[in-house]
Every structure is written in structure tokens, then in C-alpha cells.
Length: 349
Ligand SMILES: NC(=O)C1=CN([C@@H]2O[C@H](COP(=O)(O)OP(=O)(O)OC[C@H]3O[C@@H](n4cnc5c(N)ncnc54)[C@H](OP(=O)(O)O)[C@@H]3O)[C@@H](O)[C@H]2O)C=CC1
Ligand SMILES: N[C@@H](CC(=O)OP(=O)(O)O)C(=O)O
Image (cartoon, rainbow, N blue to C red; front, side):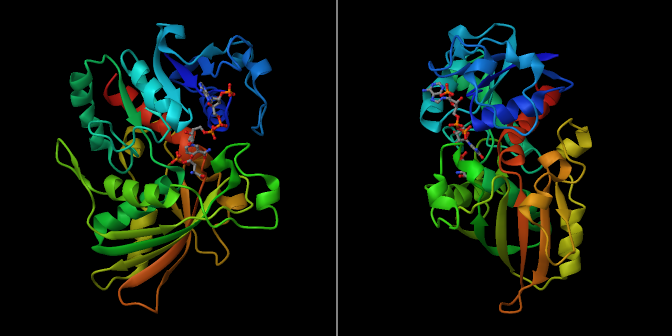
């Protein structure tokens, strides 16, 4: 077993890490860190538990520690980070001197030599790690996963980009409130309402998607060269981001071929049979009224993205559109970091 720690363990994503790591065959949670408000308390006493299942017995008595590498047990190999981005910026580097940091925070995404990875999409970017360690003289390293809306979009775009010439992608999101954290969106702002702005989200979706679907030349990532435009909105859904996607290709296409490529898409995690890998990263449904967040967010234990309403777009040449649903705190956050760590554990540690 590999001992793992969780930074930001008392938060929304931190709790999702703990839920997903319960009974993991390779990873055992032995360290939990949070702010000075929580440090020194038993995890059960420090945490208001938001998950639907019970808090695992195995973590209740663990004493929450301060978020500094000095407080961490030397037996820990991997730390999962679900810290606020501003704090992650400095502290994740301090951990990387000695530990593998699998981060869900945005602080180090797309920085030189720090891989931003979805294992089914761009696992080759893990080859940056050597350069990162040499450059910083670290024994550990940082690997990041993308933004929650980006992950769901990029998983569905990968089989399209690999098989067709994409000219442009437009996406409009309907994002769950859990994406903003428990205290992120006041109920007075979101009940009976929709908020048409999520700070920084559109920029992240546009830049991260082109990076993920680009090419790693052994040193740098060359972004994919199609146009991508995002419009992001918050809706009164607890979990599960929905996205309406509009794609224009350079050439004529067969819509059944697009459906087939998406439904049969598999990547390295499926080949390696990693524990958290869904059998199919993209599930294509034919019912007119799917996908829906309540019904589809837990597909593949929350690690699969469900696509529906795949149809030709009659208004434009060589165009089609679809709707997707992905679980924002599972595949879009904690589950993404855990899958990254499983790949690293299989390939690097
Ligand atoms: N929710 C989502 O869907 C997604 C979230 N993310 C990212 O994950 C990160 C966490 O998000 P979320 O769980 O929603 O946030 P929360 O606010 O729910 O949790 C924040 C966690 O960080 C700890 N923390 C806050 N400030 C400090 C500090 N100064 N020092 C040490 N620990 C601190 C908190 O500890 P304490 O309880 O002691 O205050 C808590 O454990 C963010 O970077 C977010 O952008 C990314 C993708 C999706
Ligand atoms: N902004 C996302 C969640 C998030 O925190 O994203 P990021 O990890 O890119 O900061 C949402 O609101 O749904």
C-alpha cells in the first residue's frame, strides 16, 4: 500500500477524496491537513461532512495537521491537494521537494514542466516530470488535473479530434453549485435563478482544452489549432455539470461514425485497468431527454462522461452538436487527481 495524505481535507473536494479513497486497493489515507482552524482536532470533529455516505471509520480519529511539509509523516508518498488556488501556489512547491503532489487546484496548471493531465487524453505529458525534478532539484514533483468543466469537455473531444479535422468548438455550460464549494454560492442567489458568470471559468476552459488536445513535443505542449469558445453559467443543481457543445469540422462526416468513435473511445487507464478507470470514459445515450445531471452524473462511478442529443447541426455546414454531463467533484476534481496518481503509481513510482 502507498500511504497518501490529503491537503484541504475538510473541504468539499477534500471530503470527496476521502470518500473515493475508502477501500482503495493501492492507496491508504494516513495524513489529513487543513487550515489552522482545523489543525490539532480529530478529523471527525474538524469536519462538517457533506457527502451522502457516512464518514469512513478509518479517518475519524486521524488528527488534522497544519498544511506544511514539516507536519507530514515521512511514510507518506503521495499528497492530494484540494487547497484554495492562492494558497496552493506556494505550498504545493514546498511539498514537491519530497512528495508526489497530485493537485486539483489551478495554481500550477499549464506551467512549464508541470504536467496538466487527463490520463485518457494526454498521458505523455507525464514525461515532463524528469525536467521538473532536475530544474527544481526536487525528489518529488507536481502533477495537475484540469478544471472540472474542461475535463468533461476534453474527454468527449479527444475521440473527435483524433478522427476528424476540427475547425471550431463552442460550448455553453450549466454548472452545479458544488463547483463553487459549500459556501460558494448563497442560496438566495441560485434558487429560482441562473447566474451567467463564473469568474475565470471561460478562460480556463478555452486555454486548458487546447493544451490537453495539443501535442507534447518532448519539451513543450503545442496547443491544438482549432478555435474554442466557452460561455459558463451556474444553475441550481447540486452535483454534475451539463454542457451544450457545438462542433464544426473541416469536412463532411457521418454522425453515426462520430457516435461510434465516442462510444468506443478508450485510453491508457482502460488498457492498464487502473482501479478508478471507467470501462468507457464516454457513454453515448440515444434517449431524447438524456443526459441529465441527476440521472447520469454517477455513470462509471462518477468517472464517465455521458453524451446525448448527438445530432447534425442543420444550420451550418459540416457541423454537429451534443449535450454532456460529467460529475464535477468526482471526474472533475478528486477522481481526476486519484486517476492521475494511479497512473503515476503504475508507471513511475
Ligand atoms: N468543487 C469543485 O468542483 C472543484 C474544486 N476545485 C478546486 O479545489 C480546491 C478546493 O475546493 P473546495 O473543496 O470546493 O473548497 P473548500 O472551501 O470547500 O475547502 C477548502 C479546504 O482548504 C482548506 N484551507 C483553506 N484555507 C487554507 C489555508 N490558508 N491553509 C490551509 N488550508 C486551507 C480548508 O480548511 P479548513 O476547513 O480548516 O478551513 C478546506 O479543507 C480549490 O482550489 C478549487 O478551485 C477544482 C475543481 C472542481
Ligand atoms: N470553477 C469550477 C470549480 C473550480 O474550482 O475550478 P478550478 O479548479 O478550475 O478552480 C466551478 O465553479 O464549477
